[in-house]
Every structure is written in structure tokens, then in C-alpha cells.
Amino acid sequence: VMLGSHLGSDSQQALALGFHDGMMEETIGDVVYLDTCLRQDVLDYYLETIVRSPVRGVAVCLPLLPRVRLRQLAESLTAQDIPCVFIHNALREPPAGSATIYVDGHRAAALATEILWQRGHRNIVAIEMDGIMGQRARVAGYVDTMRAYGGTPRVKQSMSPSPDLRPAAPVDRPSLRDVADLAVASGEASAILALSSSATLEVMRAFHVRGLRPPSDGSVMALGCWDWMHFVASPPISHVTLPYYEAGREASRLLLTLTGDRSAGIERTVSLEPGDEALHCVDNGTVATVPVAAS
Image 1 (tube, helix red, strand yellow):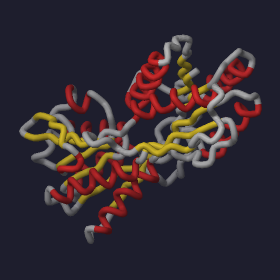
Image 2 (image 1 turned 180 degrees about the vertical axis):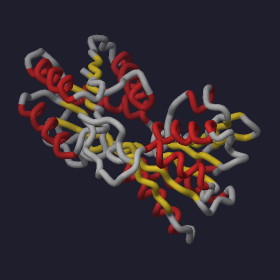
Image 3 (image 1 turned 135 degrees about the horizontal axis):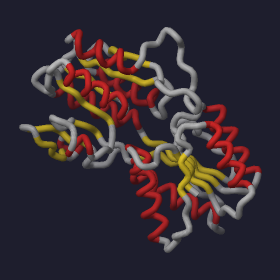
């Protein structure tokens, strides 16, 4: 079973595809994909069904589930002797019978910030969305890199727009749309680093509704692995891809290892960095892949 949220979009789609391909390589076709749609009642129903069914293992990617509830989920599955693999940055010490895959957002954000700095940007604003998986690591990558170059990091925090599986945000934190509008309208930043797909969409919306167009009216750099950055966004968006497809394949490998007789002594915490071709930069209106080593 793969348990996720909005499996047909963004990073979840890449995860599901990688998981599918990994399973098919092992000629395992009896895989069920369960989508919680970010609803706690749906998640509870799926969990009740899973523990009553002859499930061999579960891969879990619920990026908006708080740390405490994530550990409770891991412990409840392993208590039923159901091997599980979590694609989540918060579960660094998985309980016995489980494993976790960590996507290195720190390195991705650091690389994006390095490229913007090398292009001459000094006023770089990063937009964070509260409660999203990996946001803290991405913020840290941006902040560490700005300070290493002698710059001043400026992080604009926004609250998560949806309740239920998402943790409650402080009431004094503005909405993502308000943050994006302010960042674009103020003109204070020569470049905006969007740390999530939602932030990227809101930033591009804020440019378009004002009749502005990056990069001439301000540069945008995003973290993500979504085809629309190449083929739908106008203009295309420079971005650093995150290895979610690879994480899906690794999840299938780890899960099969945990369910087999080779689980003893395996590395149960795996970190995946952006690949050698993770950097996609816009040049004259088109996106070109730039080897990371050459950046």
C-alpha cells in the first residue's frame, strides 16, 4: 500500500511513479494507492482498513502530518507487524520494523540560493509555508548560504491554507497569497525563492495580476519537480528539482527489504540529495538543464 495525499499532483505524483516503477521491476503488481485528500477522517478509515487486511507493507508520504502524529502512526503500524517506510523529514529515528527517507531540502535551497547570488542578486527573499514537509530544512539551506556569502537572509512566513491534517498556524501569520502579493508588489527583492509548489504558484499569480513578468520585473527561483515549470508556466521558471521520483523507488526497495528476510542490519534512515542534473535554469525563455558540478 502507498498512503499519501493528492497522489496525482506535484511531488506526490513523482513519488507514486517512482514507487510504481520500483515495484514493477520486482514484478509486484498488487499495489494499492490510497489518497487521504488531506482529511483526517479519511486517514483514520484507511488505517482501520489496513490493520484488518493482509497488507505486506505500507509506504507513507503525508507531508503535512505533524511530527507527533507521524510517530504515532509509525508505532501503530509496526505494533501490528506491518513493515512501513516513511518519506518524511521529521521521522529521523524510525521505530523497529520501519524506515524513513529524507529528501535533502537543505542542499536544494542552498544550491538555488548560490545560483541567484552568482547571478548578481543580493536582495533575495524566501517564502516559506508553515507546516509543509521539509520547509525548515529548506529555510536553513537558504539562511546558511546567504550568511556564508555575507548577505542578509529574509524569510517571509505564511500559514497553511487548509485545516485538518495540517498543523494549526499562529493567527498572526499572514496567508500565502498575502505574502506573495507583498513580496512582488513591494519590489524590495530582486529575486524570490519559492520554497514550495504552492508558493511558486502564488508568486507567479502575483506577477501576472500586476502585469509584471519575470525575470525582467524580478527573478523567481523555485524548488520542485513539476513539469508545469517547464511547459505551462509563462515564462518558464528556473528551479532545482527535488529527488521525489528517486525517493519513491527507494521506498519500494526498502519496503521489500523490510518484508523479506534481508531486513537485519539494513540502513533504515536514507538521505537523498538533488542529483547532478537537478538545476534547471531559464535562458532566453527556455529551460535548460545545467549540471550541478558546472554551476
